Image (cartoon, helix red, strand yellow):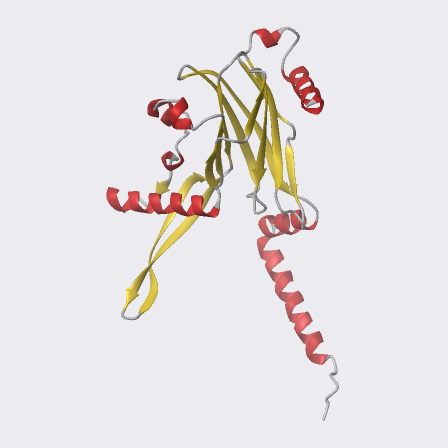
Length: 249
């Protein structure tokens, strides 16, 4: 408990001047500003500590960078399943975690949930414009189902711990296959069905070590990187072919 209080005092000193706590309904600070992905990275936990002005319900929305995805639908041709139509979807976050002190549907009315993007299936996704409205909606629903099944979209109401109706801590577990980029932590304080406080913080996910060098080389010098990779593969093949192997009879 003391560790969390020290973290909170440190965060408050960085964010607010003296005496500002009484004026702010909600103050939140992630305990890290950067996550490094290395060879043995298998996920991590992001902790957020904060304080609120009296009793209320809390909602924390963790959003990953936007992504581009391609979905395909298999069709049955006789006894076989073959590849069918494919559609490209853009603009949806790669990760969307919703945390709350109670089920969000019981905290905020639908209009407020829509306003603050708290509906998992309400995340805006751009689908190929040539599709008709009903067909595009089918693809959106399929995309949401896949993201939920993979664990990238979910809602939990057991992660946030509140102490004395003032201080709170949230332990947010991140998967091992994170997308590189900027992640947003958005916190809402809800009282009597209305948002009384709203803060936004960010942290960055980046590659570190050999992974970072390979990623930078592949993106900044794609043609050179591909040529060198191909050349090294050819040299390795020649070396293995020239290596004498003892034949046994």
